[in-house]
Length: 167
Image (cartoon, rainbow, N blue to C red; front, side, top):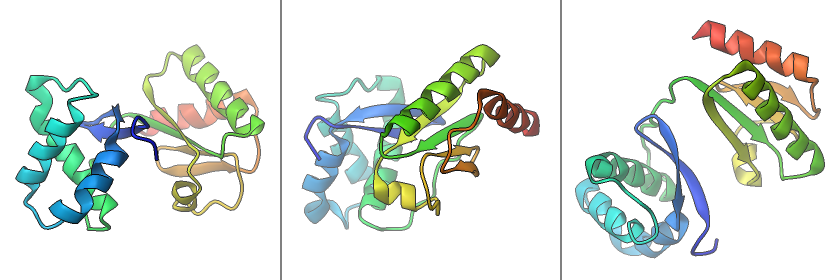
């Protein structure tokens, strides 16, 4: 992964794009795997502040999120921060169908005036974690609702309405 690649992580219930996170984790992995969370968090905040804006008032929350991502990177157990609100994930390698599904979901969310996280996962390893056997796939609030097809906008709207009404 390139030094300037961006990865989204959850910082205090919000998705935030961080530039260079993968690179920092790779360079730290051999020397910091056994350090305390406080040390890891401080070093990561310092290193990642070079290319990312980290508000002073949120440094503690960013440090916690960075440590969580670093521990996951090392294969160590971590407690995930729960997402609140609507979470929509498009699974697919970036093909035309996957991109169309993402655009359709954006259109429907905009038409419904819905706020929520919308992520397009293209990494095959990450997609595999959802157990889907085809793409594109649509996940709403951690539930796979569609696999291998681009559903009509009215169906997407129905799923989004159901998800919102459950919360």
